[in-house]
Length: 288
Image 1 (tube, rainbow, N blue to C red):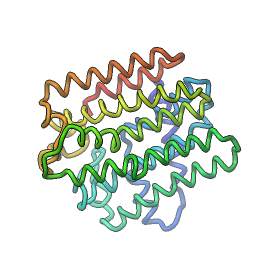
Image 2 (tube, one colour):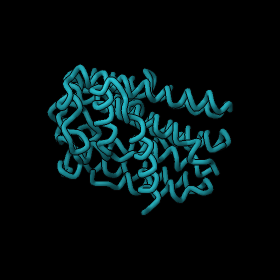
Image 3 (cartoon, rainbow, N blue to C red):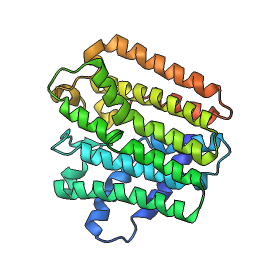
């Protein structure tokens, strides 16, 4: 078992504990459906790997890693809703609202978001160190209206109209990169990194996040729907401007490689980043 798989296994063990025997049963079943459906687990694995780069303990990183994935999953449930992207397939399975109905899917997303903050705030209350509060602040800021939610809002407002490269960059930076950024920065903070290294990890997060979104655009353009695990061609159906529609597939591929290589170069200047570099390589050169 490689490093990525071992971390994912530990995370899945934690996720399985969250929903056992909870009431109301239908709500927790809907919440668990999307969390336990799998997925890449990129954000929590990055957080844990970033923590370990600075000698941090995985047990202290785990509450934040779990919270990040719960926030990410809530955003996917809401993103798939008929009022947003109206998708019927996610992680190779019917989307949450297809299985549980639109109202319960909305509530499942709400429940996951609040559960994330319960987990982090309880941990911070029990472990009285400012770095843990700072890690939670990093995640909260990235998830809100000035981060992921703001990016989603601009993404929706941009459907069906031509937008500039600057607006598209704003969407990618906030909707996708912000939570990847926060995962790396929060992990570094929990691990005891100095401010300079935390800032380096934020920069890496921006590069990875942008490359990750461009790669998503490429997969939506020419990927294998079975491997990707969701309906493809949604960008074209929803008349969304993408990096490919603005710049073409060749430039999109070239810019993806440029950001990927820049992120790896920065990570190589920080000690003990071997596992983190391997994760980035594996995730950014993917077919799903």
